[in-house]
Length: 84
Image 1 (cartoon, rainbow, N blue to C red):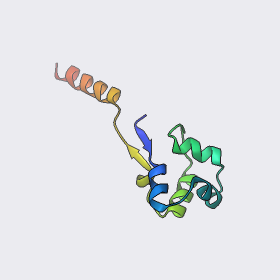
Image 2: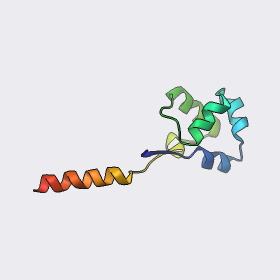
Image 3: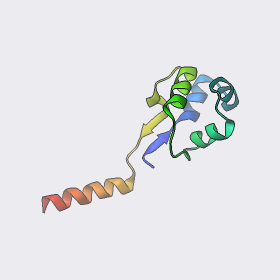
Image 4: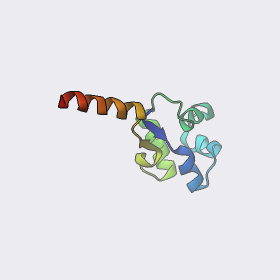
């Protein structure tokens, strides 16, 4: 997936445990664990807002875009086809 979740890094920088964040945000440990491990398929803006509020950060500190190798190959294929 091209979106990478860096919640673990932000928690480490803030010296905060996942359990403490769960209590502050009101999200279950299971749901935050799914988000932290990058297995989440979606995140609500209200959850993202609460995370940013409690961690005193911007959404871009929690979510990073990294182009997948497969996407790079597709982009290169499209560019090559268009050039022909």
